Amino acid sequence: HSPLNAECALTISVIAALLTAGPLDRTLHDASRTAWVAIPVVFFAALIGYIPVLTMPLITDDYIHMRQISTGEAPKPLDCLTHSCGGPQFFRPLGFATYWAEWELWNRAAMPRHAFDLMLHGLASVLFLLLARKLGARPPFDWLAGLLFAWNGIRPEAVAWTAARFDMLVMVFSFIAAVAVLRGGRLGLITSLLATTAACLSKESAYVLPVMLALLLGRGALTRAGRLLIGSNFAVAA
Image (cartoon, rainbow, N blue to C red; front, top):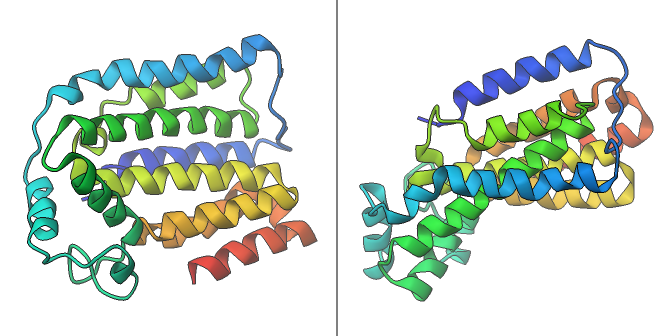
């Protein structure tokens, strides 16, 4: 059901290739103005590519979530920490909190919901660009990675379907955690822990995130700092 399965398979393949290619340069290459121009370019490319979703109506599960909130059937956001929300096997309190906030702000309006999802996609595209750089991609390949991610049309429902926001949130927080782990240091540790926590509160699939982080670090996961980073993230997911 997840619209990210094909992308995940491709990502794992690329990561495996990078890890077997030798030592990684985990610095942001060329901190010049040219390098940083890629960030707004990729962000706005993502927005432009999917801007038609702003005119789309809500569909299927979107109305189910709104009905559950409007009738009081859905638990409050904090209650989702101890009660199932949206399904018998769901643990997505952060995702449902965004639904509650939108109901209070926009009622049944579709456009603001799509605008929020579009912003999440733009942010995810930029984070993917930064992750590619951390993994050693140099211009123009980092630009290409960001643009390919931004314009990926395999499963556009992850952007266009409000009920798929759980996947968008997990993706954004997972990328933040990945970039933070590769950055290292105290800031990287704190940021990765917060991002992993947020990802796990967004969708159940995020529980495997620490495994991905360990793969990203490669041999670095065996060092003292690496063990602290990965161990702490495993503890959060557990």
